[in-house]
Image (cartoon, rainbow, N blue to C red):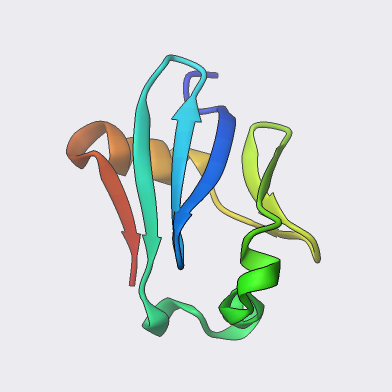
Length: 84
């Protein structure tokens, strides 16, 4: 699928650069207000740095992942996806 993530890397605290299968590249940024519930563990910089791609999705240890389709739509439209 066009929204399959093929590469991800941390670029700043709570920010990622992602590349999709169709060549689209953009940034994902987490606001502190989004780091609740299952995402609270991403406040740990060591865990955040362990981001990787699994099955076309951005993932972390502990079964944390982001919806690639929503991420793709936002990045395609604005160049970034801000999780608030």
